Amino acid sequence: MSHNLKNITLKIWRQDGPQAKGNFETHVIDEITDEASFLEMLDILNDNLVHAGKEAVVFDHDCREGICGTCSLMIDGQAHGPQRGTATCQLHMRQFQDNAVITIEPWRASAFPLIKDLMVDRSAFDRVIESGGYITAETGGAPDANLIPIAKTIADAAMDSAECIGCGACVAACPNGAANLFTAAKVAHLNRLPQGQAERFSRVESMVETMDEYFGSCTNHGECEAACPKEISIDVIALMHKDYRKAKFSNRKDLARK
Amino acid sequence: MLPYTIGNYLAPMLNKSIPGTDHPEFKAAEEAARLRFNGYLSTGGTKSPDHFHRELGKIIWDYCGMERTKEGLTKALSDLPALYEEFKTDLCVTGNGESMNQTLEKAGRVDDFFQLGMLMCRDALDREESCGGHFRSEYQTEEGEALRDDENYCHVSAYQWGGDPMKPNLNVEKLEFEEVHLATRSYK
Ligand code: SF4
Ligand code: FES
Picture 1 (cartoon, rainbow over the protein chains, first blue to last red):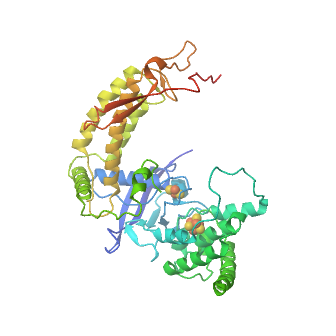
Picture 2 (cartoon, each protein chain N blue to C red):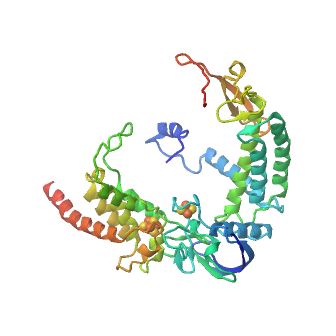
Picture 3 (cartoon, chains in turn orange, brown):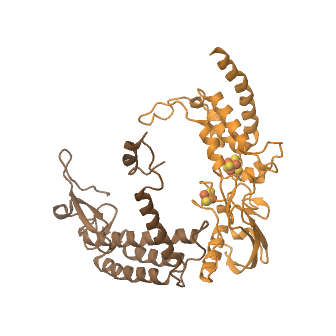
């Protein structure tokens, strides 16, 4: 049974641009159905703000079903809010009680400069992905399924890494603003599969070094894993480090032969 | 990543120098966009883009859904321009054009949706047959199956912008089947 929540106080971060000074703005929602998603609650607030002649709160969203990685809110200090293993868009008001005071902030990390209010620029992630380059694959029609035999355990592990939606919660949750979970998920996805072997070591080397240009260093806090909406395990970071170390030897050997 | 309709135009420009932002075409496009967005910002009305989006969606949902009728489409084509007129005079967009403004972005989209909505209804009204996934109630077999009219509608309708969203220019491209001939699929 749905019921209406009463008297919800929102403390929302407002900031006009990356250089502007920001502050918390308080809004009270008198009543809202607990069936509303968190983002729908913000939609309603925004529509009310516009009708009252005030500027709507800027926030990022797209699929609203946990698959695109666009939504990105720090809710009461937790990336994607209090519910484990879900993105902001999958959070509903039933997670909150009457009279709740909810603080909403953008991702805060120096690699993610603020655009406005709750929206940040995550294109540093694109730089990491770009530096990974392509895999060698035949073009043309899609190959038959199971043409390359892959053990179920490997396929499952690769899939677990491929689940990363690139939301950046791991970076926002990390006290160092490190992107190791994200980068390692992307590295592990391909490095675990036969199709990813040809460029395995050049890929890991350039992705890790591009990551280092933008993000902080990992000191094993494990906050990333706790915040990740896809519950990606920090084990992938171990795999990335192992491959990176190997790459430093093998890529140097390649160089010496030239 | 580009929409597949654009790649063809850009491909011949590979390795050629990129026109600068002082190019007259760029200037004209920028000016047109600025005028359009300033227009939304300065309407000074009372209703949000979301409000119009919902009202518009309701009309399309009711009269231009999977099943449509001449009567409903005619009604939609009288309701839509009236609502569009209201959109142009009673729209309220807060904020400004200087920093990120999602309300302004929505206004632009809703404007497009209005024009597209009118076009959809026009074309649905024009096509006096039931074809593809859409069903004009007036055109069905005795058993309630979709009834096509290959005699008069075996063509693609491509509409061209003519300045008034209610009066698009229709271009007709006949469909000719040489090897495989037209048939009616049975879903029974
Ligand atoms: S690893 Fe998890 S938290 Fe980090 S970007 Fe991917 S899905 Fe988001
Ligand atoms: S909006 Fe797509 S994951 Fe949340």
